[in-house]
Length: 154
Image (cartoon, rainbow, N blue to C red; front, side, top):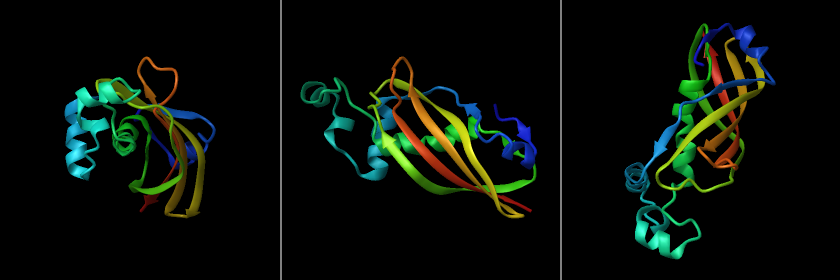
């Protein structure tokens, strides 16, 4: 989507799906790089032979936090830009659940529904977005989250 909207038009989108990102590949290289960056080198993430033999997943799987971290790029691709906004910051999550594993080689994308947009100050908008990370070809999502953001205006 990534269209430009006025602040009031964005607020009026509450209750609507506001965007879907592109598909992104979560390959072993990406998983390995995340394991190094976070020092989370559990075998289910980095050892394809052992993960295939010893887990119910049949392959290595992405870290849940890797999937969460991709929400940023998904949001940049999918969410509308708000005219006059000077910046947006991650305010956290009220709910975050990992539903299905993301196997190495899978493609995932984010689907966003705006559930709240409250002007806290004339220059500050609290945005609550329900996001689901879909796994291509799978019935259940990788994760569901209730994501909060603060959008600032001049």
